[in-house]
Amino acid sequence: MTYSPPPTLRIDFVSDVSCPWCAVGLGALQAALARVAPDITAELHFQPFELNPHMPAEGQDTIEHLTQKYGISAEQARANGQAIRERGAAVGFTYDPERRSRVWNTFDAHRLLHWAELQGPAQQLALKQALLKAYLTDGENPSDHDVLVRLAGEAGLNTAQAREVLASDEYAQATRQREQEFLDAGIHSVPAIILNRQHLISGGQPVEVFERALRQVAGAANTSAASVQSA
Image: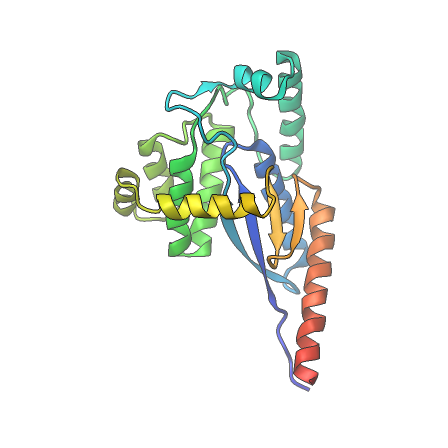
């Protein structure tokens, strides 16, 4: 009897670095992956999505932005922030809505993430985590090139190359193309997690939801692989 290792799931994680629910979703997904390991393996790819693609360079006050965009009161915006803080804490992510005082343009962060993916999935994951923490925990500006270069270094990436990417328009076209591909596929809110390019999970779901989906998709992949081998 020949042993066949479990297939590696491809996970496309469509998100924005300014999205607190994306941090919650990533934390829950990683907790689910830890639960199913080593029986199920996965390769994570972060895909770009801009919640505010037309945000000017100076950004906007967060409460002002949320009340205008979603038609809610300042009190509701603050209450929502506290609810997300609690969900984040449950999966090991510290969200500090008080320090997230402004909303910024995130396109250059996505360009840098595109470059990081070319260096390897582990490097892209490290940069994504650094970006989420810098903005959502520490209140830093994810459009500031000095901040981005420093975070690239913290993620183990070459800072000189990162600065070169940011100083140019490198990967701008590729990033916009990917954004449009997911918009065309019907992704209009994030996080959106796509397993094996077929199965969509929307929102910052609980760990159990991700675990169940991972087991179901991996089981289907195993069944398919077994059918091919026996054919």
